[in-house]
Image (tube, rainbow over the protein chains, first blue to last red):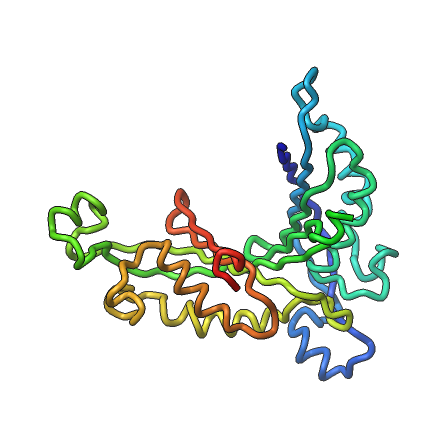
Length: 141
Length: 139
C-alpha cells in the first residue's frame, strides 16, 4: 500500500467561547483565545490518501483530482473565513484544531473514492497540529 | 475517527556519548566524534502527542496551557541549557543517546493524567529524529 500526501494552506479567523460558561470561566479555560474580537492563523493542511497505484498510470490518485477535491471541500469553505460565523458545520462547536480537523475529515472522507482517506493533519501553527485517522473500530467496520 | 494532538517544544543541551562498559578505543570506534571528552550539544526539538476524547464543552483533547505547564516542568526546564550526562540523574549511568532520551522523556510524560501520551518524537538535528509510541512503551 502507498500513502500519498498533499499539502494545502488556508487562512482563517476564530475565537473560543462557550456560552454555557461564565465570562470568567471562558477567560480561565481559553485564555487569550477567548478574545471576542478573534484572531487568526495560517493553517497548513496535509491530506493523506492510501491505496494501491493503478498499474497503467502508476498513480494512486491523480494529484489534480485530489487538489480539486481539497479546494472544493475545504479551501472554498474555510479560506479567509471566520470559523465561528461562516461555517455552518462548526456552528455551536468551539473551532479548536481538534474540531476543525474532524470536520475536514467529514468533508473529505466521502469525496475521496479512489483510494481512501488515511489521515488529515491540520497545523494551526508550526508548533501545534492535530491528526485524524480511522480508529480501529471504524476501520474494521 | 481517532484524534491525536501534537505540540512542539525545544531545548538546547550538551552531551557526550561514552560508555564506562567499554574502553577508550572501543568508545571511539562506537561513538566517533560524539565520544570527544568535553562533549557537544544540540538544539533538540521535542514533539509530544496526546490522545483522548474531545470534550464537547471546550472542543479540546487537552487544554494546551495544562500540557505546556506539565511538559515545561517535567522536561524543558530540567533539560534546557544543561549537560545531560552530568545534570540529569537518569544519564549518570546510561548513555544519553537520543534513543535513551526518548525513553526517559516518555517515562516522565506518561505521568500526564488529562490525556493519554501517544508518542514522543525528538529531532536531535534537522537530519536525525527518534520516536517512541505508547504501544512500544507497553503503556
